[in-house]
Image (tube, rainbow, N blue to C red; front, side, top):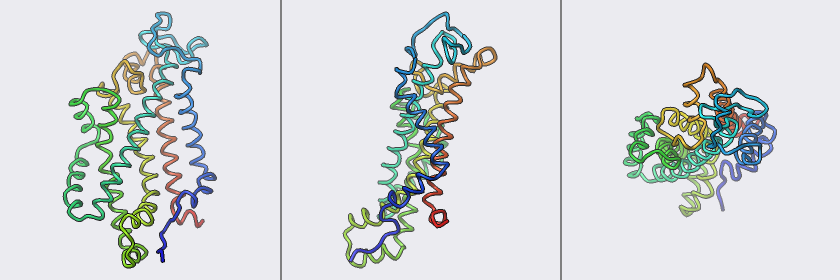
Length: 286
């Protein structure tokens, strides 16, 4: 006799609410535009983001250069679209790896007492260090590259996910349906897959959206201070950093990548807020 779980199939339960929720709809629509722009950049009237043209130097937006030119004549429109690839890749990679590693650590800490006592103290130590400082320190040791930026941001996000999963597991272990499953002799792997993991997916989805937004902002901040993506790779942080030097005479260099960055973070946060509402039982009841 299998014991019931709180949510046997969270995706089926919330599909209707997700499709109807206005916040999620708007967030997904904005993100779709950003993703399409980044993936289809070569076919959207762009040029090589590294190509130099003296005629475009600090040129304001026009029909020839939709977003204008930067200090060395590179096309800002092309660099903004190609820069979206870096930011979106960093956000998605950090969110995916952080959730995967944090889920493993949190499950072990929640079920194995001696692991909880050792590993979670390490996680507490990492959380005590500001994420931006930890990322700067790691990049200083490993060198500036997109891969190292992803690694540095992931290290600072894993402790937050692991603590979330640990607290969820500790709470679920006290629930009657889990205790009943243990009493009837449910194998450990079945206990995880049937009762524990399905009930951690909701909080992880919401946390993953916030990690995505945080990673995009952290990457931009690292690039802005020169400790992130190498200058030759177009990214929104690099573009804003370069544009601040000539902001008074060429504000478009900061405005367009800044708007793209703000819209991306806004969209992801809207999706996260919508998922939090949809996964709330009180909201579903209403």
